Amino acid sequence: MNPILAFDYAGIAVFAATGALAASRKELDMIGFLFLASVTGVGGGTFRDLILGQTPVFWVREPGYILVCAAVALLVFFTAHLFESRWRLLLWLDAVGLAAYCVLGAQKGLDATGSPAIAIVTGILTATFGGILRDLLAGEPSVLLRPEIYVTAALVGAATHTSLFLLGFPILAAALVAAAAAFIVRGGALKFGWTFPRYKARPGRRPEDIP
Image (cartoon, rainbow, N blue to C red):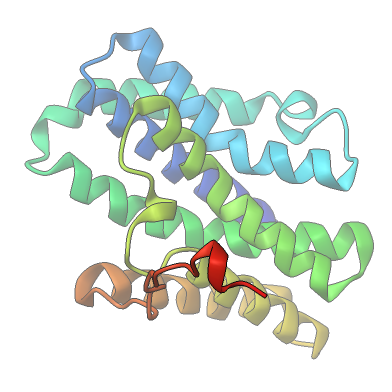
């Protein structure tokens, strides 16, 4: 199997699992599981394809992706009760999906435009948009707004893959190194609480003090 295609299916399956876990936390029915798993699984890739003008989007051209989401949703529906902390599992699976999808998104951007900058942007969007949709629809605390590093992990993975690929590394080697880098950053943030300095609010100037 093409290594990028393998990352595609892996990212979709893992993100679909996080959508299904979010559905389990809300105690939804099976249709709710299928919906959240599918939206989370294909959301980032759909957004990427629309930005790149690649329509119909990937899961319309290859319906097998939706079948993967459905299979994962059903699996989680019958097994979610076995996990003690589904929120923690969701976050770690999201980290795995982010690592796979930032690589895939970067390669798709390179293939479509040849631009390293666009590749990094599409890598970030592919890796984060599905999780953002999941949290919005499920009413969960958004991973985007959590204090620890999130988007930066996708940036590291996408930039690493793009750089290594353009330097002539084999695509599989570049993808594996980049995915590992993204997972280490996101996993370290989850494990050790890595963050960047946050904005500190300051009092605004009074109208009468403005010249």
